[in-house]
Image (tube, rainbow, N blue to C red):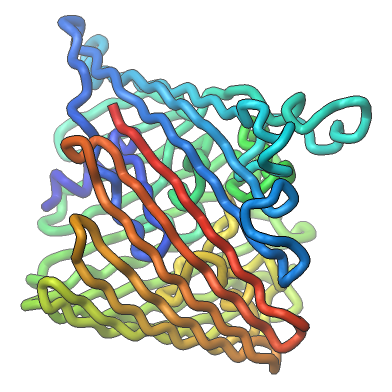
Length: 415
């Protein structure tokens, strides 16, 4: 168990996520090609398409309602280049394949300066390109592993600076990471996060643009995770960002307790963002309960976030748009992260070679009602090398005249 957790952190480039409804499950990769030099080579190719009626303003599958991307990612990892020092690198590219000429009007992720659009440039002039998504060095000594450079960070150990897997590709961070497992059944993680790119939708989220999160101060993180009791995982995280908010220090404290045994799963989470630079400290907590019947699984989750902090900033991932809340669904992050009470019911069924999922959200957010329904299907084909996803999302809010409907499809081939 300890070895698996360490590998998930120190060698996270070998795990590529492909889900949309939390918890996101990693996509199994086909065996990578192992060269005689000790290098492991792999990658993935992704086709991603989404269409929405934009609250009744557009029809499905028209150019105005659609956005799409084709992506290619290549990686190379050597855990022992010389003297126990390892190295990993990953390059990523995105292209519209000129679909904006007739089929789509936007992209899921962007590469380029959105401000250049309209200044003599077409959409493909600022969204076709590539970037170095990961480049790091590793070193292992006993039960301690060190990883330095551009890398992915997992939500399980870094709940407010993590790599989101819902979009075409994950966002990544420029960070220093140290993981130690000397204490039995306990993993200690220390990190200094300098910066990263941002995972979002459309030309406003430029994945080739890496920026500092807190000037040269960065953000410090310390996480402790313990699994001494069978079925119980306890995780506590502390972030410290000196002078981040108007010259005032920011502290984030977050805890999570998960218990799973004999098909039953329970969870309890909570924490706070504290700073004199905030109008008030932000506080959130959540709980969940579920049961797995084998072919079927069901769960109910609840979260509460007060009106402290800053709307759209606190209780959110600094590298993307999602939250660590149990109630996180495909598109509800804007309605659960501030001044909100939310209940989410989920049900899953294994059928037709894959799994169907249904999730329903009811939120009382800033005194108004928000509802969301997610109905998805996911399966693996071609010897589990390829994951296929199809999803329908329904959203409604008291302030909208008409509800919003979204269809999302993607295919992810791992090699």
